[in-house]
Length: 170
Image 1 (cartoon, rainbow, N blue to C red):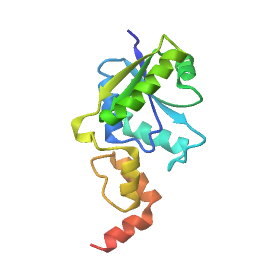
Image 2: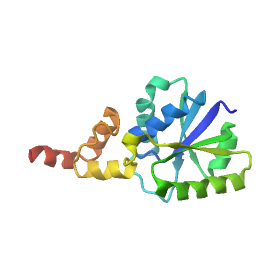
Image 3: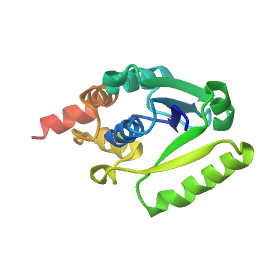
Image 4: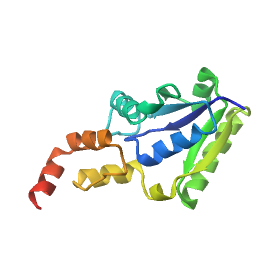
């Protein structure tokens, strides 16, 4: 078995659900690369550099076991570059499965040596996604416990007016 797995995603921002997946993957693999996929057609809230900083802070206790990186292009090409044969993907609900299965099958078609491992998201994070976190923060809502305190601070920096309005209405 491989000692290195890759957990790809946009991580805009990283959530406690992502962190849960990384921690659980580390129970099976010696090292995990958190690989930020750069999609020039996708608008993100945080820059790649900000996401790297946020992820490193969020997983700092695993410095020896977690590598944070970014890649452009095909994931299978990145997998060859880092010499890993294992992709970790999280599943929250049945609706995730169809999309994730399509990705896994396409990756397998492109490189037969790559295996995708699906991990069920921890029960308490089933409803959490980066998009829900951003929408909640944009409206000034609390994301406490769904992201790390550092991520929450960064979100407040991105949406200061929303949080000021919320604080003022209490």
